[in-house]
Length: 419
Ligand code: ATP
Ligand code: MG
Image (cartoon, rainbow, N blue to C red):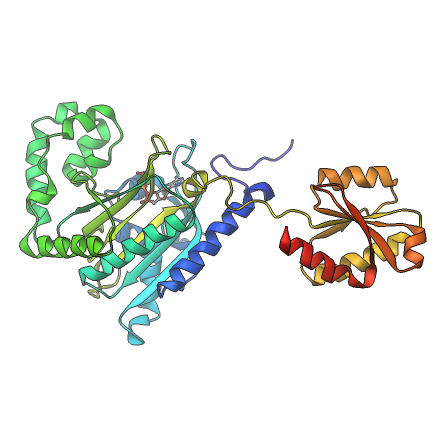
């Protein structure tokens, strides 16, 4: 029987790859321009890192992790997100001794055991950016500005930036109790998961996608009414700096973000083209994460963009497949070696050239050139070859000219650039 890929795990085929490469190139350009450096972290970590870093009462840790025991008996987990690993790497390699401020980004696959559906997979890709070591609200604004600039650079338009403050260790416990008291009176309206969340972490109920839970939470107390003076001041400075940069935002007091470690600033960017799965990206500040995983008190802020969702929103003209520049068609038996030699010469100049490895009629070679969407065809005729010349045909307008083979690279280079 033919072996198929695992459900929720996708191949990204050559037809699509241009979009992925375009997005990745734009990430590098924009993020590095904002002073971020790339970091690559392992795909597998000790399970404990995610339990402590993400928090036990989260969807990820409760039900979405790919966890297994390896042959040595250690519990390992395929990374469901990148922030905890990036923080671990920052601590492990003492990056703070060089400079306390680290601006890092990372692109790669994440794994979550979710029910596969459109826009939701078991292996999916994220773009992550994190700033470690800055508690100042100015950096919150800077990170958000970079995110929005990036999304615009890839061509996204119908975007809405939503922000909220989640409070801190000082003020959130009181809010949590208020929320729990409010929801306890209505607990019969909550789904089974939320009944449990009510005890473990009632803020998570805001994230529930069940309709009756959403209705129950409509007039629940809002975290913004409970945040302490310091958190309020922090949030105001973030808003000030966003406005200073001319960035519009919407306050969303119900946005709490899925992970436990967030404190203060939280944000999401929503696209109007995505339907139910509408958050392309989310992030926030997490001033307690480092203590959870390593004991040091280091503030952090960052975001994660879902690549599949981002790519599904790209304008049609972005990241188009690279066309074949030239197909070399051979007339007669002796041209094969010339085709091989010319193709190699072009490959060294990064000109995409193909020819038929088997002997085929000119007609069949032209059909293949057409199917491959070649921009030009070089026809190597016996008579012309003797004079060191060949015919170059422009497939877009069918015009053709005879050219000296010696000048092929220059002529093609010019034409390909111009078209
Ligand atoms: P959701 O509420 O949709 O489950 P989340 O809170 O789990 O999102 P994050 O952990 O913040 O999402 O991840 C950031 C981004 O990664 C999301 O906005 C989304 O674009 C993407 N993402 C998350 N889970 C998946 C998945 N299973 N498949 C594809 N993309 C995903
Ligand atoms: Mg989720």
